[in-house]
Image (tube, rainbow, N blue to C red; front, side, top):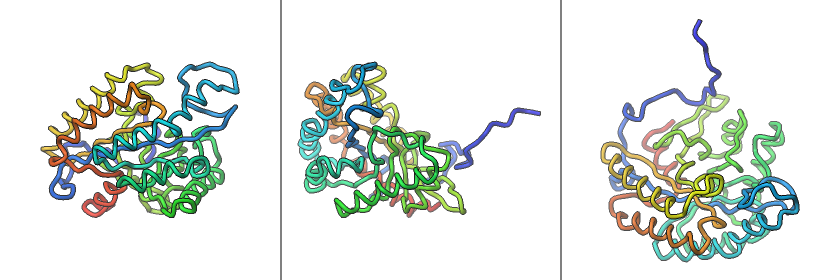
Length: 296
């Protein structure tokens, strides 16, 4: 008998070329969203991206490098987004609400934005918990952001994008409408959950993402700038045939560094020059519109 592979049973295969057509608002065909990650870490233990790997704890070098993003980089990026008129999805560890709530409040006051839950801290990985522990992590993240900022998040990005086999079920049961952990398509995809439910997967990139592009692969910021521009230009051309989504994943401790933000500004200015042709939006607005035109 032929080998039968284990399967997640969340969605069936369907080619991008064999789907019903739809449009984004105002007849636009390419939706572009930015996901900006606001992350906070334990000092002295736990996970964390490393500029210089293999150091002993307490790892002051890498902890301080990441904290630069909250203290400096995110504020410089706010100025850039504001000058370009870009909406931004705020992907927030709930411990940020205690550490620097004024940073999130500034983004919410000055930009069109959306609050997206991102676990408690990126010092922990979501798929290391049992079901009760993971459900508690999701609920605590959701409830603390609501309590501090007065906005209940409906979107989720897991810390370290590390789902368990039950994560979509737990998210749907906790009231989340969409998540962004699966980088498997250029359109939103409905995923089945237990109890005959569903949750929407909104495209969020792993290659137009500054962490994998720059940290482990030691990529150059100018090469990342070129990636953004080439991705946009190609998707804009492809979107003339069908509606698509382009996401850009950013972290202030990486792209908020002065020498990198200049490259990012050039790339986003290129996109902004086409704003009449595209829908500049947030992942939540994408999920809401798609659910209306292509209900699950």
